[in-house]
Image 1 (cartoon, rainbow, N blue to C red):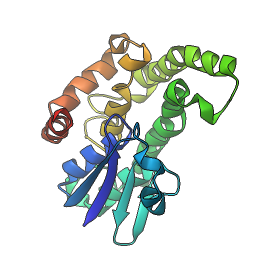
Image 2 (image 1 turned 120 degrees about the vertical axis):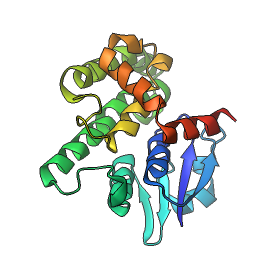
Image 3 (image 1 turned 180 degrees about the vertical axis):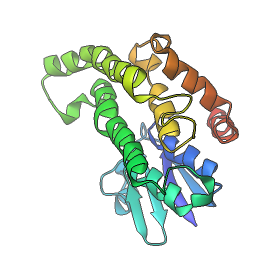
Length: 206
């Protein structure tokens, strides 16, 4: 059985939704990053990076959201969560998720995790101040050039959609009105109507 290490409010929400969409049999381990669960010796033995998500499989542990999403799509092909039969289309999905991982998430992280890049209080304050501008620019690019609609890749739902939904959920907390991006807002509302997403969000509310 798969085991997902997850923390509410983190990017691991995308992996959790995707496991639900796939109909996978999995065990969920809920962690608290605020309490420092990711830094315990027990968790570091699973994922030395000390971050979530981590997905334990029969062959070992996978980390990094794009890798986990691709693994789930390929492990459960009947769920049709990625264009697996088209190398170029699958690469486009990977490119989108890589952008979310390497650029959008990092822009957001400068608000809460500035200590990863600087120690000077003035530098930390400047990084925090800059977050809304940089993150909004990322979402403007997604709005204008990357979100085909109704789903990220077009007509077919894919592993890109729960990932975008997860990161778009951080906009309000970062001082950005999601209404600035009508296509992203419509996508988030569309996501909330999906059964898997409703189930996961109901669990979060408990």
